[in-house]
Image 1 (tube, one colour):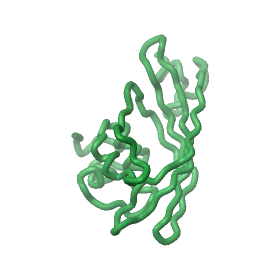
Image 2 (cartoon, one colour; image 1 turned 45 degrees about the vertical axis):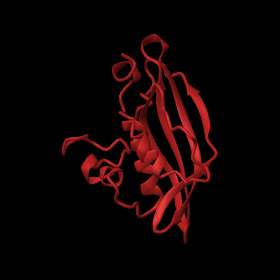
Image 3 (cartoon, rainbow, N blue to C red; image 1 turned 90 degrees about the vertical axis):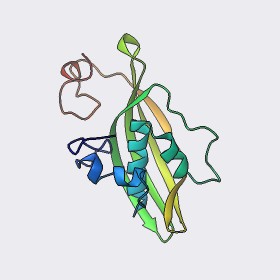
Length: 154
């Protein structure tokens, strides 16, 4: 799945084996934010089984699929927890398609989480998707701090 040097997709700056991978392998998330970050990483890595396991049964879709979406960047804007309830407000940048048909977008969501039998589960959220049209000289939406033309816009 990864090497010891592979950076975690969640943007923590940690190596995947020291960040989200233990959760993907069965460890319990200690906070709603940790679960949300691990779910983002699971979307980026195509771990559909993990996404289903961490989705509350009352709101879980029949099929979890992320066809053709490439997740580029995660920004956690706010997170909180009180007892067995939690919230995480995040922004996730992605691309769809390839080549000249590649489209950029941002999904922003205020997600709700619940803890049952000691495990945090994703309950639901209010997602908003916005399309991006990065210019060649704009900062790259992936978060690299480089110009789009020198990064993902090649």
